[in-house]
Image (cartoon, rainbow, N blue to C red; front, side, top):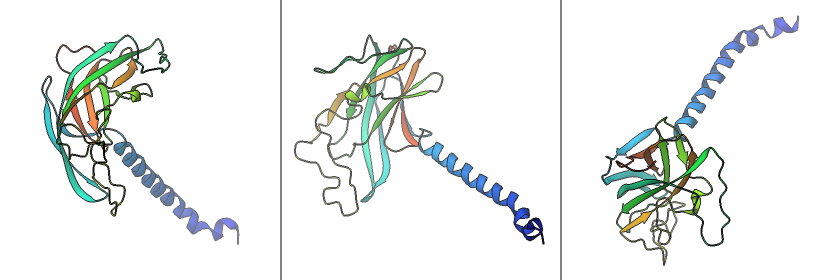
Amino acid sequence: MTWWRRNRVWLALLPVVLLALGAAASYRVADYWWNVEPHEVIARGEPGRALTFTDDYEDALGETSRTLTVEVVDVAELDAVPVRRLDDPVPLSDDARVVRVTMDWEADPDQGLRGCTVALRDSRGRTHRLSSAGLRFASCLPSEGGGPLVPSAVDDAAGRSVPDGEERLPAWRTRPVFVVPQDAEITEVLLWWQLPEHVVLPVPPRAGS
């Protein structure tokens, strides 16, 4: 009996197996793509107005929520990336420019806001996240006083507590800095803690882009 005859059943099933594997892989790719980009809007603001919203989520201790108010005050272009103290100047390529976003925040000191991300979206639908230069500047929280911790386990005794010296004021301002392409016309500021869910804040009228 030849090899082909001995394995004819498995050879007949091979196309079906390959199709099943391909379908499974495509589902994994789709799930990964969906969960690493901002796709699901949970709140949308209006230009020039503060937005108050509640974000329901689950952490290691169970279901909880955060409520806050945020406003994009200004989106302005800078001549260069600002530096702090003795940091070396941040070099820019000829096809890049610097954008600073001014945001006002309000939240009760017991609201857990750590782990927040701010990004920009331009008129072409491109999302611009903080670069290594922008990470020098707080995106969501004040430079001092981050508020409650994020619990790391169900039995985390310090979960959701506020460490000494980390008490957060009920109102603060941040100015995250972004490096974006020269042709990027910024139209929206995005805010999220866990993708794909995110908040959309339109750029205020007459703001520089």
